[in-house]
Length: 314
Image 1: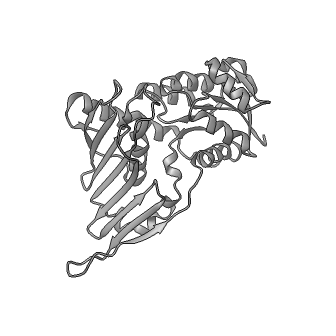
Image 2: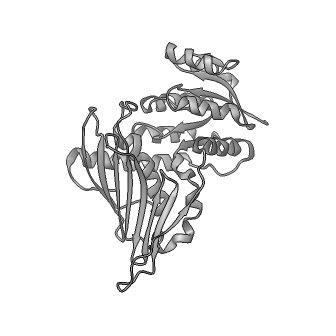
Image 3: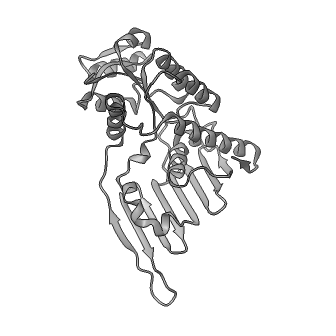
């Protein structure tokens, strides 16, 4: 195999971008776009002439090596289960499934099939994380970490709450930085939809506290991660692609704030490249299914805390 033959399932807001990446890469061949919506299929056919546009995955599943799942979250499980049963590699947007039970069932289904199953936790693709070891004074010794992701309402992903829509990204980053927390306490508000639109979750690690605040009904856009230790502060502005930091501070001198910038990356392109490379060359899976399961486990705990008002152990 020199190219991975791919079907994209779900031609919505994110699906059209994933389709562009799949068509542009040398390591993949976009065979088909699948969507049950006639309107979505019409848009896909116009944008991708020469690519099959179909209403059902059944029509093309025997012609492909892999599926890109970019449907609403509530459909992830059924589509992934069908692909795995047919022994096809799977890239699935985050969260991997709506529930932990579904994620565990996919894991069981995939055992012994030698499949690449990658979850779309794209925030790992920021170029700055490769520089993070240079800032160990703040990151490795952090006592506090605050992750914020806020934006005005965009009318999308209303089938899930902000925890599944946005916080899932930051939970994955938190786990990448620190591993799994011991407990979580969360509070939230349902401002526009029937689900939580603004949530703050406090994660206890014993030796540090991580606070994640996400809102999809805010008055401004902010995406940042701040690490605070006894030795200094590092604030990464993920929206403006820069990091501000202070270290070696003393009480008898003004605080010096330094700044570094980093390059923008096409996260969808990067994660698709890694997906196909794992299939073709056997490289480590960028975000394996287990990481997706672990993120959903924490999502479950956040939702349980929101429902009960109690701190939930992990």
